[in-house]
Length: 298
Image (cartoon, rainbow, N blue to C red; front, side, top):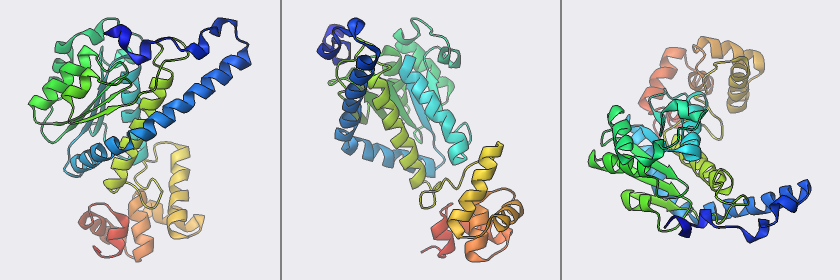
């Protein structure tokens, strides 16, 4: 079965990889990467309903949990970590769970992915509920750790999704919303950190970003729930307020501080011409959506 996986086949375009010039290697890789974006385009209809399920979960205080091993696990953990500063969500809202634990992010834990029981165990420690969405990630589509995690998530009533880079994937059988992205043979045979990894990263970008838009974390195309945890993000917060309202920098800084360094509140204060307390109340009543808050629930 393993030998039949598309991601394990040899790519005829790179059979003489070790004889190519540096430029030829780069050109071949670049040309093959185009297949990753094209493959993702074909599964957009499958991604959309999963995004809606994730959005619903986030709106009801549920969680998005990525589960994977190796490169897939690292990509899930990366997306989860980056959601925190980008969308202002706590670390408990978007979680990346990988075989071997977080230590496996920087050092491979051989054999960690081969146990279904380990996947189940790790999901149990997260106290998965029916309000959560669990997405299994596996380029091969057959990783036992991911299968075990999805099986347990389903037994808890959680919504399940999966991302595989082979067709007829095993993990698809355990997902309410399966996605199979046929990225084909890699330039370096079996190295799924390449096209397969790229495709998975693109899909995770879409799932988290589109879901956060649906949960009110975005105004127009601005990341209005950004957390100013460093100087760059502090200055970005000012620019976001300026872009959203048209005020000058001095005004943006002043209102930002009056709003307790909360970008959304500052924007509503300016657009609705209200005090900080009223702006926060308006946002609460509008479930965090700025346009809804400013328009009075319309």
